[in-house]
Image 1 (cartoon, rainbow, N blue to C red):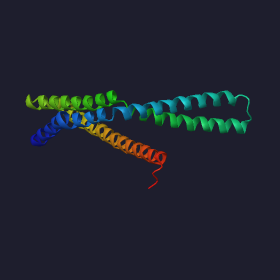
Image 2: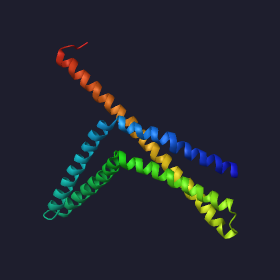
Image 3: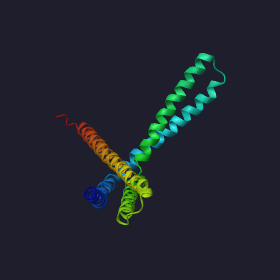
Length: 181
C-alpha cells in the first residue's frame, strides 16, 4: 500500500509540475479566440435575458394557452442561458487555472496529511481520518483530471473553429478575387 501511495503522490507532482502548466499555457495560444467566443456567448446570454424579460411582460395579458406557451419558452431560454453560462465559465482562463492548480495542490496536501498520519502511527481512531484524507485526495485529483480534460476539449474546439474561420476567409478572398478554381 505504501508503494501505491508513493506512486500516486509522484503522479500528482508530475501532473502539477508538467502537464497542468503545459495545458494551461495552451490557453494563452488561443487567447484571442477565447475572447471572441466568450464575447459571443455573453451577447447570446444578454439576448436570452432580454427575450425572457419580454416574455414575462407578455404573460400578463395573454390567454391561458398562450401563457403556458410563453412559460415553456421562458424555461427553454433559461436552460439555454444556463448552458451558455457554463460555457462562458469554461472560457475563462483564470478560472480554469484556479480550478486545476487548486484541486491538484489540495490533493497533494491531503496526501501529505495522510502520510503524516501514517508515519507518526496515530491510534486507530485516526484510521477514519486517514481514509478520509486519502479519499479526499483521490476525489480532488480526479476533479483536476476532469478540469484538464475540459480545457483540452476547449482548446481542440477553438482550434477547429479557428481553422474553419480561416478557411471561410480564404474562400471569401478567393471569390472576391475571381479565382473560382
